[in-house]
Image (cartoon, rainbow, N blue to C red; front, side, top):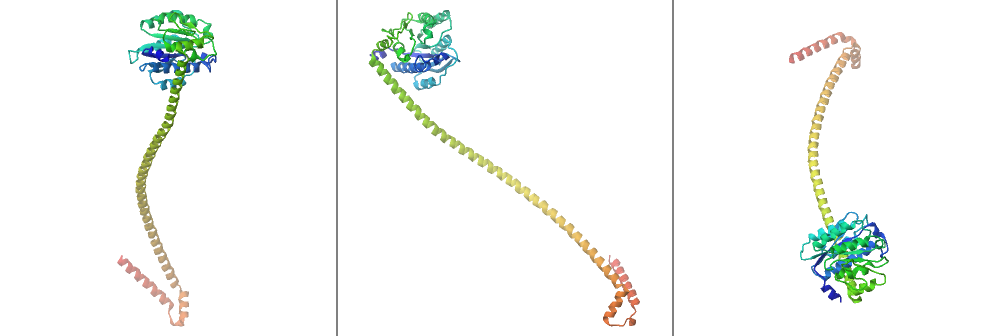
Length: 384
């Protein structure tokens, strides 16, 4: 039964190596190889963490730029999130992926955990067999267990099977490592490999994987072997139900987080905007006050200067007006005196009075007026 299988699961730190090379575009495993790996890794992570409350699972990609996406953890939500972000690129480096997983497990926090590496190979392995066997011997020496899933049509016909069998033979220690050669699709990859990888114990039936080179799965016996290795269809159904329930809970938590984050972000953004506006208003007001003070001082100085200039201009105008008036008055007096000195004017004036001109000596009057003007001039000179 499933409970009996879980009881046999040891305390482990698992590192899953994912093949995200360009070969994963192939649709021989529905819907394509990359998504099929994603579903299988989710299944493995859930089963490993459920089997032992202290077991952890990590994730890395082997194609393009090799990258550790998640160190061994019990937070399956982070692993699911990282799986969604994996893109297909370049070629898979099997040797570098194994070494990186070994280093990640070497730095695990709980040294009581047994290190295990699970590798998905969906593309041709270019590393030669000698290097693979050397690496396998090193892993065996350091008590690492390795499970390899070799899948894809081209990988059933090339040298992958031969190389991987040599590698597993080198790393296997008391049947702790397995090679699963999945036949060409279309298949459900998760169903094809679940029992062997999750059981981690010697298997029977069509799915059996052994430390002497693993097993090749036939199209006819694959599903039957999966059921036998997992302890029956009831155990498989229970696992699928648990996986579905967990996936639903994770999706609900993610949706709730997405709803809460925008609200919190909006509140924080609005608060920051208000603070910025207040600071801007304060700066503008202080700047306006400074400008106003400067403007007022400048206005007062300008007004004072204008008033002084205006007063000076008025004084100049007044002086000019007085001078003009004096000149005008002087000119008028001279004109009147010249008129009065005319003999004809005097005769007309005498005629208007009705006095006879013969009775008055006109020349004597003119001489008298000249003498009078001379006296006035002398008086003025004496006063000055």
